[in-house]
Image 1 (cartoon, rainbow over the protein chains, first blue to last red):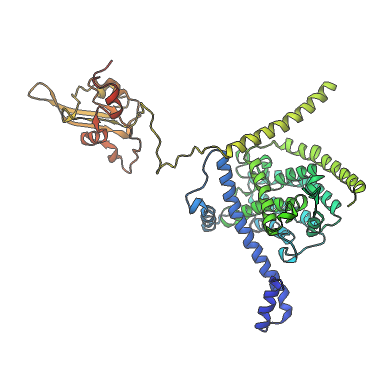
Image 2: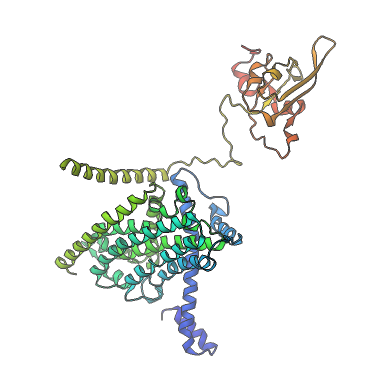
Length: 353
Length: 167
């Protein structure tokens, strides 16, 4: 019998004579706390990784003072953030100002509901049958929080930043969603586990049957839109330091700022995880012969490679201009994404599975 | 019209080419030797002719520094941070009462070193001169002797042993 969270909690509840209908809510609570701690851990070490990689690329060493190899650096930074005074501008709108970071963070957290970390039901919190739709719906909520933050701060930089963010996120969501459609067409399923299962097998005994094979263009579009969605540097006009101080989070400090930061890096992990699932076969090994490595490691490995690519691009390219950003999104990415859907239709028509 | 279309395609090709080239450059840099110096633990190899704090090295043949209290450095110093008090000795040579440098005002121009007729002042290798009070920056003769070490300074001892005086 496989050991699952539900099984353990049911066993404990039976011993303690707690009614069985309390099991399901408790499982959800425990699972969500596990996911929350996973996000915190991932974000801490993504920040560390980003600083290290950017340092190496600039021929520096990066953080190496706190703990061995500087591994405790981001923990110290997080503790500092939590200990800081939580300042609210006198003229700010109080409640929107407080709620905004929560609106931004919660969707970034909610996406983890459907991400399949491994094979089977115990590695995904809830394998929704409309997983892809759910993701694209959830990923569009943070914009509301960002606009709220900019508006409530009562600060021109914040407002400009949040307007830019709204324009950017709304326009880049379209290519992102359009790039997520071809894997759904190829798999015939919107469930992320279903999409992963559809990528099983190899061609000619070597090449994995990942959707990347026919979706190189779709993958490129997805990664570009993902860069914009997680506002990394070539597309970080919403918090361009040299132009807008810090964009929508100019007035935020302490815990509220930490929530924005957390959401940003959690989003980076999320978009990479979704890309790994949709195009790179999720938790499937490269070749069935390598399936002795647990699926979780395959999934995390692919995700980390994609995150490295995002960081690599981030530390290479300069920031684009606002008009360049918009024209690139609407005039290049969206037509290409539509073309890619037509091409995928041809693939589905002429090479049925 | 056709020319414009060609340039458009060219522009796209060039964009993609330059992005890929930039990515390759940064990827190569990932594995380059790091240039960071872990400062307090590892220190910079000072180049020859480095101008640190001006000092009065001790000439061992004489048992003291070579200063003859001629006041040349006092006049040469742009920020007038050197004060030399002296009186006439019995052998018609000046005897130094006090020799003070206010290092806090020093701009490390090396004029005092250049103008000194007996090469008594030498720009040393000391550059960590920060202190908590202004008084600590006021260096008397004993401190300048101690900071200066032995005359002539080590790298010159082999290269130009007998040189003294100015050009």
